[in-house]
Length: 83
Image (cartoon, rainbow, N blue to C red; front, side, top):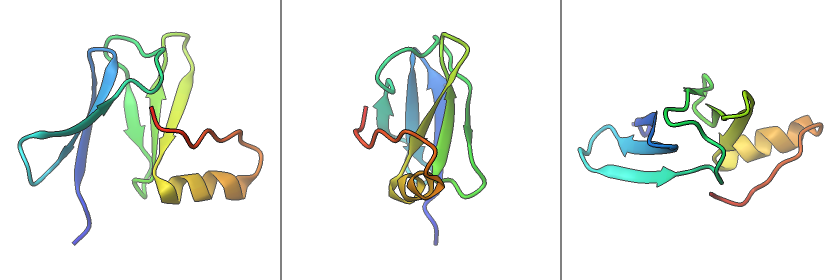
């Protein structure tokens, strides 16, 4: 069975839950710049997460498969450090 995650933007950060556990899994502020309630959206495969910023931009968060996809595109600057 695939992992099932829930993510929400709240309190200037992204919060993640495993759907099989009521306790929060982790949070990130994505290295800052997020609004109080950022808009978020996973891609179809669930390996990339687009997050709105205060400056009307977006940040892309990625897991290992997402980083590999971004690198294969070649035109994106990729920061593989975690926030």
